[in-house]
Image (cartoon, rainbow, N blue to C red):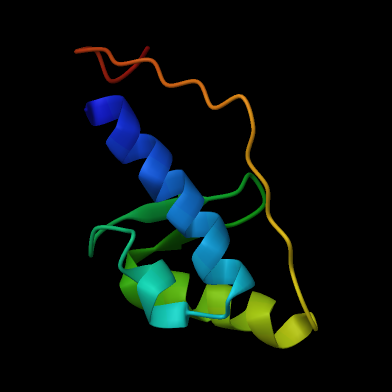
Length: 79
């Protein structure tokens, strides 16, 4: 069940960006979440909202796809 929840969230991430649903995208994250894409670190809903709104403004359309989703569950957050 946990694995399915993670997969649903990943698919919602793709769908909300591609459909331009800024608020739905933002609410996939906890209020104090950190989005780190390796280039820039964004903390909290306001910064994540700015990120996705900018992406949606920048492109006429986006098309995100997922395949071979692999989720490993552990009690150790550093693994």
